[in-house]
Amino acid sequence: MNDPKLNEKIAAFEEELKNTKYNKRTQRSIGLLKAKIARLKQEHHKKATAQLAADGFAVKKTGDATAALIGFPSAGKSTLLNKITDADSAVAAYAFTTLTVIPGMLNYKKTKIQILDVPGLIEGASEGKGRGKEVLAAASNADLIILLVDAMHPEQLPVMKNELYEARIRMNMKKPEIRITKKPTGGITLSTGNLTKMDKATAMAMLRELKINNADVVLRGDVSPDELIDIVEANRRYVPGIIVVNKLDAVDNASLEKIKAMIKPDLFISAEKDIGLNELKELIFQRLKFVRIYCKEAGKNADMNDPMVLNEGATIKDVCDKLHRGFVNRFRFARIWGKSVKFDGQKVLKLEHQLKDEDVVEVHVD
Image: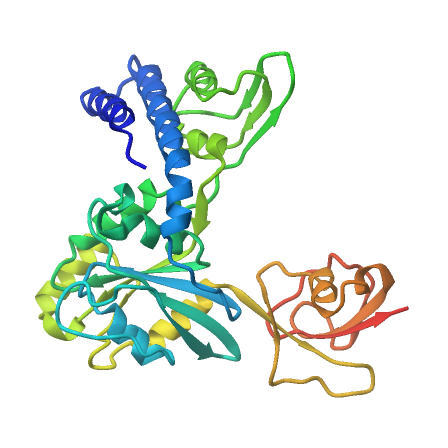
């Protein structure tokens, strides 16, 4: 939904912010401007949500994780998808070939990773250009984002990063350690560490502008105004990402060195020439931080072909939950073979025990 008056207010505050030089005297003014812009954008976002839900791409998530393949039109997304998955995505040497989301399944190291080829992203996508809001909605629901950059157009990367940021997606960013506990009365109690990016007065003013009037607020670390806004609004997605430069074969070595210095990609590939695709599969696997668990019954060998795929930090409780919803209450102990224990077959009594990749787990219940 497009609200001209709301857009005018946002534009006016953004222009004022752009023209305000940062220093100690203007720190509070800048913080308040950012808070006002965020509040208005949040209002705009709420109005657009119903329409976005109606127009968005419906893709059923399958497999152990989902990765969204994001890039400008003709970056080579469809070719790459076809090379690393079982998908059949239309490929042509012109822009906007992909008109809907094409899912494919990457089978790698006994895991199933769904890769989504979404329509090409363009500048202004977060404002709705080129079905951008639907594309970014698909990205926000993914477990991993793969930004595919055309080697002949490295300037695409900062544009894509900005569109993701404006769409509330925080790629490769750590969630700030901020705790906000609302209460019925009593005003704001603010506890902080050593702040250099804003002072306490700025933080208090921003909280009030963002409609936080009664709360106990704890800021851990050197929190910025933008990070405070992110936590107050509580609708950001913190997602791991990979930056991949495609069409390696189309540029010379000097250009590659310039690209390395300019955008610092994780990997160079050529989807067309099958260069770097195995390395990409491994990088996707590593960034998803899987924990593959092999289950066994007492007196039997473990099934080493079909692991239970969990995420880093998974515990015995997570295994029990997946095996049977009643196992947690009936749990007695587990025997574990692998990296999470001191010796193979070790008896573990705590459900909170954290497992490691490729552990073998034998659960004993009443």
